[in-house]
Image 1 (spheres, helix red, strand yellow):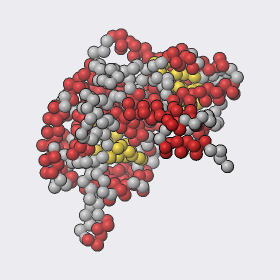
Image 2 (cartoon, one colour):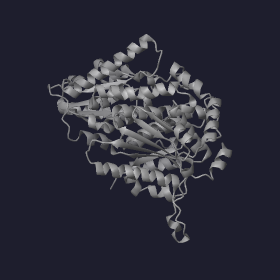
Image 3 (tube, helix red, strand yellow):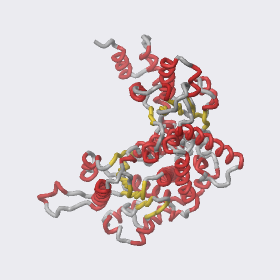
Image 4 (cartoon, helix red, strand yellow):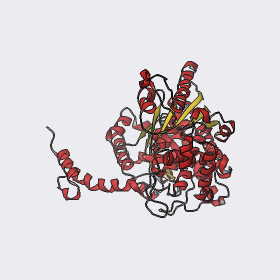
Length: 515
């Protein structure tokens, strides 16, 4: 790989993309999405050896094990079968198929009842506002779908998303709501997530203070969880509980009942199309040979960029306002999955895995961080997502938006040499690896396919790096440390011996009476 990199360093991207056979190998069309990887800094010999690398890493056998339901989440001894929720796994047992279909129909019946006004509050008024309380995987996906597919949200309640434990997040959402017409969704797989439960307790208190009717909770609170016992102890009615299986990871759960707020917003038929688009990618990923496999090719390009070209940053640049939350969603999907430092066998890695993923919405970013992208000294890779059509009926805006996206891609890939030392400050080196995704129109099928492609790319990269992409133990330490700090901040006991000196000093300052 290093030898290929040295050879390719002298070949400009502009020359690479003239090879029509290479172009055919690096472009893919599926479910209304066109993926163009031709500006990646690769040629056919490098691609061939990357495929050999995938064979040596047993990506194909691990992929087969994934779809067979084997326990690929080895630290938690669980299978990873979120694809089954969108009918993307063949040969499931009849019992599991029936179980998934029953859960899906319950989800759709609830969503359609709320959306149509059939679901009534305790004073027999229809629901006008839905407050969804979750965080991480139970929040980012549903919010992305709800915002991205807002064009499909006709005659539906307004959806409010609350995630942050900062009380201002909840207070802002509740500020103008009427408890008689507000429905709350408490989304926590374990029903022990700190942020979600604190927000849920405060929301319950807000509701009871204004209604003085404890029995009315059953008409205004819904739970999505794998822990029915804890949810019922919280006060939720069993009829209002939606299950999520332990083989569905949080960041892969938007296809399950965790997608309820999105299903309310866009309707069950459109949610079905979202699942269908993802299932199309599932089938492609499971069946396509390595050299023609879109998620694998994306993963290999990523590995090449991070481990060989030294790109420790991946910019997700969404040239569509409806996709402004896509970088946030992908941050969790990719960095929580593959931000690991030990192998599947528990050995310390001597190579880097996941780069920093960040991004924003064009053209705003062009007036902010694109200066660094074009003339900075850091190596990075980029994904640029554009949409051909919108429903705003403002063609000049759309054409300018997409013209800017295409221009930025050309500048990043090819750069510009002013040919004059007097203008060296204008030089743009270019030669940055990037992929383009062109979506014909942003509908449920296309969005489902886009998100599933990224999911499977993440899986392939985890296999290539020999890590477990399906656990997230790194987040546990901070949670553990927060508990005694909270107790110390909440009372007058001096627990400073539990902390380091800097933490103790800040706790003391926080507890000092403000003047």
